[in-house]
Length: 178
Image: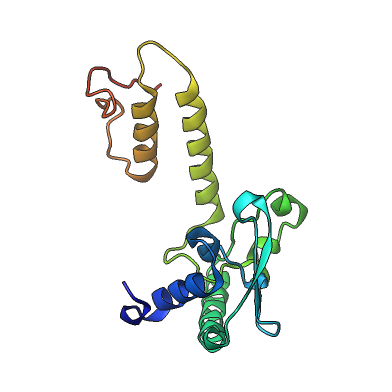
């Protein structure tokens, strides 16, 4: 697929990835504070090897990226007014700076198409954490893979039954959630 076939945000993301050498997740996790329009530079945080690096921002992408960031800022203002607009902060920054997750510099350049409250994110992350801990326990009558799948399905689709045949062991065992 060529860049000429894309338009809008997809074109902008693909052009940034192609021109800067960023990996897909690095581009999608790009924060507003990491784009320097004056210096024509992008700081890639926590890249391969958990290192930061700087890459150039091409002149051709300056104006489309500025326009996109302006739209994202307007969207962020609407989200803040509606009680949303909180983003994930790495490491312990959320405890150190409690209001930073709502501030403009920490917002993503390419935000998600759907929004959610921080409490929902916390509930889902705690359920995921509990599922990981629970599936790591070895018990002779349980298939950990199915338990993990079932917990994930329960998190996002509450109609799933709690006793489902295992896909990884061809249904020879069943999961028993407590």
